Amino acid sequence: MSERVVPPAARQRRRPTKQGVMLSEGLIVETALRLIEEHGADALSVRRLGRALGADPSSLYRYFRHTDDLMLAIADELIGRTLRTWRPTGDWRADLRDLGLRMHAGALAHPRAAVLSSYRVTGRAYEIQAVETILGVLLGAGFPDAEAVRLYHVFVDQALAYGALDSASLAMPKAARDAEAAVWRSTYARLPADTHPHIAATARHLVADMPHSSYPGALDLLLAAAAARLAEIRARAGPRTATMGTSVNTAP
Amino acid sequence: MSERVVPPAARQRRRPTKQGVMLSEGLIVETALRLIEEHGADALSVRRLGRALGADPSSLYRYFRHTDDLMLAIADELIGRTLRTWRPTGDWRADLRDLGLRMHAGALAHPRAAVLSSYRVTGRAYEIQAVETILGVLLGAGFPDAEAVRLYHVFVDQALAYGALDSASLAMPKAARDAEAAVWRSTYARLPADTHPHIAATARHLVADMPHSSYPGALDLLLAAAAARLAEIRARAGPRTATMGTSVNTAP
DNA sequence: GTTAACAGGTCAACGGTGTTGTCATAAGGT
DNA sequence: ACCTTATGACAACACCGTTGACCTGTTAAC
Image (cartoon, rainbow over the protein chains, first blue to last red):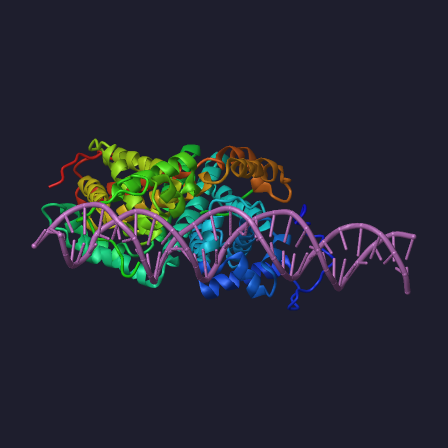
């Protein structure tokens, strides 16, 4: 190692691996994502990744300082992919709803990366682009600066937090997941009405609802609250238009 | 091990540890919580816990099948503590707000347990009590069964998801956390207005807002949306009262 | 061409982790 | 007093991330 770190993009002096592979940041990230996809969230370790690449595990430390440096690179790649498949229409509410669902789905597809990236600021290219885009949607809708930032923060954190939560749940072995769903049926649904009246009264709904993600519901509540707030702001600023829930993109 | 597992509560045949400690589920959970509190989230491992207890690590497997069995026990204890310090007033919105903030704070105090418990159903005593209580608040407020369950689900998941998210962030070494805050100041706040107009326009707010948890904001938006929904329900059912945002606790 | 610098791949080792199979023993019931 | 058995201890396994030392091929300069 000696002083090792990572020369950024100006890499030269390439040499193939003993097994003939040309390493690169891109190849490593891609392989890591493939590993996660094929063999589950826990399949990603420096050693296994090295094996999958046909390289010594320690070689990876020439490209990433720690494992979570690698995870951040993976996270940024995921942000990029999500953003690339998203087509804004100009309707802020529909656009944010679509984007939120895409972020959530993206997280579910890569549970391990999602968990790690959820609470980190990568500061990388795609992340910056995402911030700029989402802020643009909110400002374009007519939210004042401070409010737009607050909403941006809540929107992103909610998508990431739920993404991580549902990812973790999804990463459990299937048997364990089924067992959890069974707890609602066998434990909760059988509590007697005299000791647990509220659970007993709603048991049917609990059994049906609880095993699914509550993210779509949470997202809709968030957007509803935001729309109400926007209507209020518009009414206060000057009651001209009565349209609500939709907004023309008239950013300066 | 042979077939080992955990005889539930009917434990007898106590024998002290070599160092003279009498093990018990309770003592183990308490010690684990103390360990987390004193030495941070990563300080909890079977081996360290054994050392702290004055027992061989493998002894713990007589009480818990896996480490996350242990984590679930810890999680339930946390739920219990949170619930015990909460005093409902009858105002559903204020009560849920208070409870949400307490859950979030409780998670922050025990990051590792929070992350693990966030996506698990313990089915243990305190968890059941929490479900019953929260459902009672919502039903008492006047939400119909199905809606109450949906709201319960979103409320709890939101508290847990944000708890886990902010826990993870808090569990980072302080230096790393500071570095992340610096990214907002040094990277985002310096983007030129012509390439990133929206970020540039709101940079001041981003720097101020982003390093803090967005949970309180998210919680308030959720409660606002719920209150609006409740007003709608009441208006539809029969326009008698005009009070809104507050509710008398008239559960059957 | 020859050479010197060094990026980058490899090896071996360290200290950690969760988990389990085997064994010894003290406690309880009879 | 005996027998059973719950439970603690020990040792080992297979993994993990990380690092220091070494070696070698590529490149740039001469």
